[in-house]
Image (cartoon, rainbow, N blue to C red; front, side):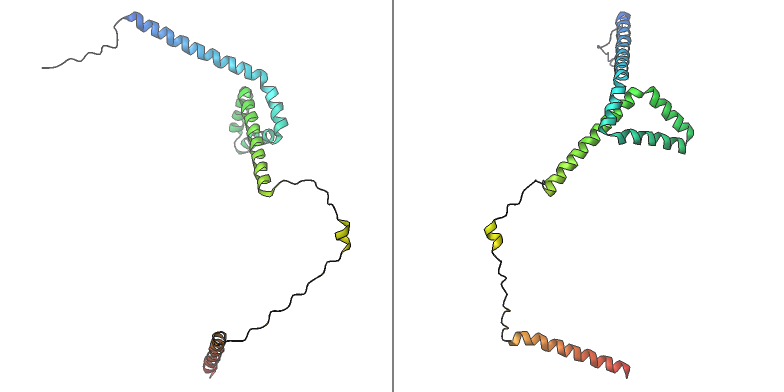
Length: 178
């Protein structure tokens, strides 16, 4: 006995298939229009972003140009491709460079804050001199040397051991030269 399993979730109605296909095409079209709008908007503000990037951190722009020139030196076709893609995708390149400049600025601020916490902040100060204390001379106290303690057997024990060690080493050296 074979059991037939039937999937109840689908329908054999061709109208539902057509509606789903039209809906999928509509979603793809809407996504395409949104990407086109965002690209157009970024294209309008790209020059402003590039100027802001230059103000925030000019090295980001210089390093990007150095990277493109380096690609030209290593592989001309790759350099041409990167240049063309950078020109075509200037809205996205401008956003990328701007975000990199902002990130670099944030890292510098955090590093500066950590350095200030480590070293402390420098404060402008003015030294106030007390005239009465300045006129008094500071007496220099001479330290007295501590009295030598009487030697005891424990201290002389090590001194005796060192002397015996030196004598035995000298005897061995004398025997080697004989």
